[in-house]
Length: 278
Ligand SMILES: Nc1ncnc2c1ncn2[C@@H]1O[C@H](COP(=O)(O)OP(=O)(O)O)[C@@H](O)[C@H]1O
Ligand SMILES: [Mg+2]
Image (cartoon, rainbow, N blue to C red; front, side):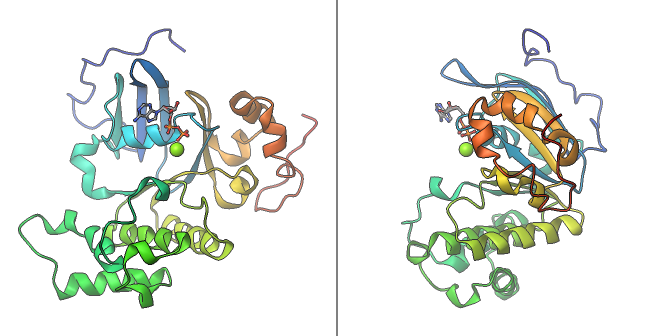
């Protein structure tokens, strides 16, 4: 790892496509808030069609990573490519589901309206949504199991229902790559199953999913790729190669043993149980 992050000035994209084979390519990314680094010199390469977990302790920079990718925070250094081009050129191919708890759910609007907002990028500013758009939004609400709540104010929805609204909004975007910030945090078990099944369906259709995930117990069941962060990049790669006690310890320190209890011995998922003695 180099001592200083790369200078922000050079433009590595000047010569056209950059790592076009990758769904997400991040190079030398450093992000600071008030001079304190939240991410330090991060390199990430993500092939298309994976379902990737981003894990790391509280304050590790997981949300910041997603925000840097979609231009919501400005990096000190580094660059990001989505399918070989910067985000500003790939906006329409990107779906974003923010952390549910960071959103103002008291805003007076209906579930259906929130889902329709997912279509604005495709409509452009001059066209108002019509019957076709309404039908698409209703179909997405049906797909996440809450068509009957379309007209309800979002303030009157449970946490699980709010999360389903967000998913429906992402679905109508028909993106190629989705970034979701803790979509399974604070929802009931049924909603969690709905979320996971839907994400797997998207992955099976060739989409790339990048999911900030808080629950180490389910990483092996849900994901086939993982990025382990704690301000610096700890490890990245296929879950079965990279999701090891050593790497978790590097990210979580002494907390790791507690958090991962059982997750290396049960073999609950499609992957073989890991050897704890190694
Ligand atoms: N808008 C902000 N202003 C100042 N500090 C922030 C801001 N957003 C995040 N941080 C800080 O940056 C670090 C990383 O935050 P975050 O990306 O939210 O971590 P995570 O999602 O992994 O919990 C934390 O120390 C957090 O307090
Ligand atoms: Mg976060």
